[in-house]
Image (cartoon, rainbow, N blue to C red):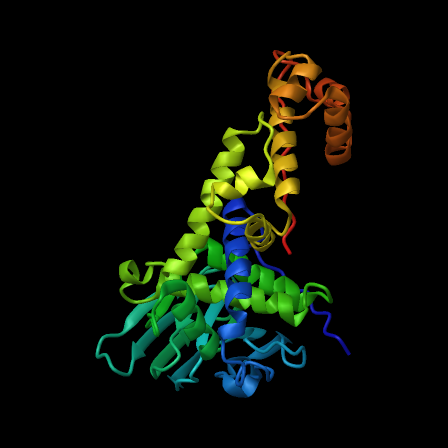
Length: 358
């Protein structure tokens, strides 16, 4: 029977522009490199036997878990974790703990160090446990925890392909805050609580890839060096940035795919693949949405005649503009201007293009 436990937290998932952008980059990078990642150890489900099994200790209470869902790169559990003291042996995989409710006092000493770390773990804060280090823990207090385990092979693949390094050492963290990691953790929690399509292994694999990218980018030792991006990834970003900048500067012109592709020194087919990977849409649809977004601002902020708004934003005629605008926004340009308010009649919010993730 499917679990129906509802987990309540003060944190809420928000698909902010920064989160959307990072997620799109990582979808693209995951697709680019999926064929190069060794799949021998990634095909089997990541189960509780490969973790610390904290949620199954007698003193704790398991609320939700991912076992049985076919997730191969990520094991997830939600549990009420109470006071305890003892040693955590290395699992060989990376652990991220996110506090959902209830603070706890932590004292941790890594086996290789004589110095103990002390911290208060509050809601919306993280603890991070490296894959290959033993550590001595003392915990005081009860809290609801989201425990995420990332398969080591996946993290190493991200390290090689995104950061150009065969291995990056992750530091132990207590009471860390990370807005992007928080949004990713909440997205995983949402997938754990709900049924398809959000829980499909392909979607969760993308979340796992993005989690690993942020883990290495923000929480690895010698972070400044590790933030260097591999040449392939940098070229990908640079090409996309040039194309987007050119489109935004040329919305009023007659733009063909050949002209746009020339800005990135690639073929039309290459341009289409680039947009599909980065925006999950075609260059034509992206251009249309940018034109509609600009037109919506002009309609609200100026008194320019609709026929001139159409020409200013690159539409061949007023009728073409009106048809495309109504299809995207749900209102005709005239009705949109009337509803949002003419200049001087109060502030208005322009149409905001929302690109759908693949």
